[in-house]
Amino acid sequence: MASVLVGQFHARDAEGRVYSVHEFQESQPDAAGGTEPVSTYRLAIGDRVNHLGGDDFELLQSKVKLVRELQNH
Image 1 (tube, one colour):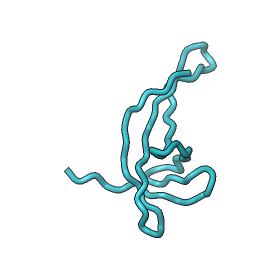
Image 2: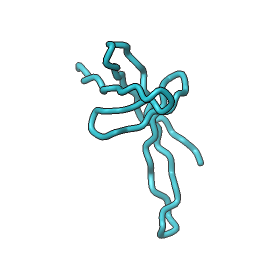
Image 3: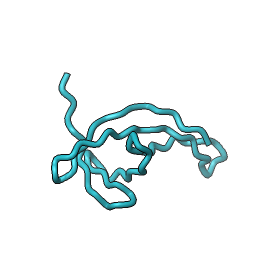
Image 4: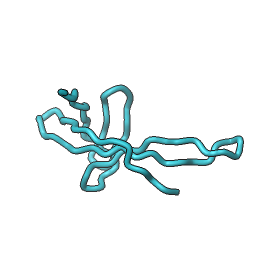
């Protein structure tokens, strides 16, 4: 299964540390025999990140909660 980098953003924990999060799109088989894109998240250093919904994320191993920073354009 191949992963394609589709985006990246910064997120902060409660102590103010900033993390660089990469969003990947992976194709996974669906029930109808086709493929469905699924988003997965990892830190730039490779740690896995769970998306909790909205702008909330959690580091898988340490359970540290992260909040996506708003982008300023």
